[in-house]
Image (tube, rainbow, N blue to C red; front, top):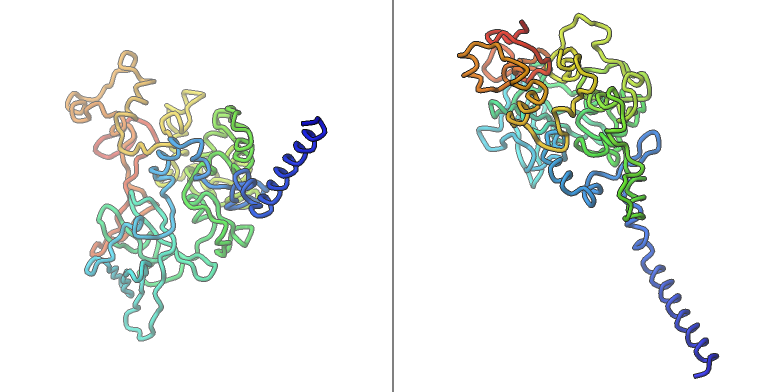
Length: 410
């Protein structure tokens, strides 16, 4: 074969391959680009884009698998039979308050609350359970859509009594309670309120990311995902906020955005404008800031209580992650937390001065003694048949030496 024929044949082969590739790309235009461009679930106000924790799973499978078992991740979800804790069985599906009876029922795979106002003939339509709020460790509340507006349902579930209860803060009659940013911000990773200030309860249904997932603590991750999908050989994370690059206060702020009590005064943007890595006090002011003498409640202000503890004040490095791994469900693992105490308070350096009988009763449980469960004054429920409200018991983060009979600091 002459060199000319070889050249002609080579050109024909290459041309055929090129033509086949062009035809394939025309018929399948998204195949090559889909993987490099993950679906965007929501867009933050600064332009950064959320792609969801399932996208993180492809490289961080172990962390993802443990994180979805945490109360953080389960703190909100679309309502279905797997995550609604309350009973819909006849006899256990009633909440009877002074002026209204609520009946919970299931119909064709959906769940509803029906309110019947006593001494009134006018019928009210059932309201659908659309969103579950709360992991169910202590209880759950529920949210319904009315077109594109969010409202809380009046019936909540209280885990200790395994019953339906009147939602905390509700009167003994039926009302509508709109859900604004300040209500939902600690139960979802992101929600886009159609009122930028977050005062309304009208949301873009397509831009809500349920649960507290990876991107709430590491910031929206689209740029990170796109870069590493296109550069799989790179092992150093790019375009991702890493906790160990932050100052101590910024690390604390990432948790304090939800665990420092009410931050009712917004200084910049709205409740979702702040992102981990920012300085929280530049975005919102803590309610406690204006009333230093007001006692801190154990519900929702773990940061404030910890910051008042000598353990915290005596070190320049302690933060929430010193004792908590946010990627794992560690609830009830007393051995783990007690070991965290002993890592600083070794038996060789610190002598527990409790009475011998108390030491035996405590069984070396530092947490039970120095961080006792304490009734919340802010979070209470009215149980059916009780004249007094019942408090939620929550472990305090004010580490100290307590009078065991009164649960007060000595």
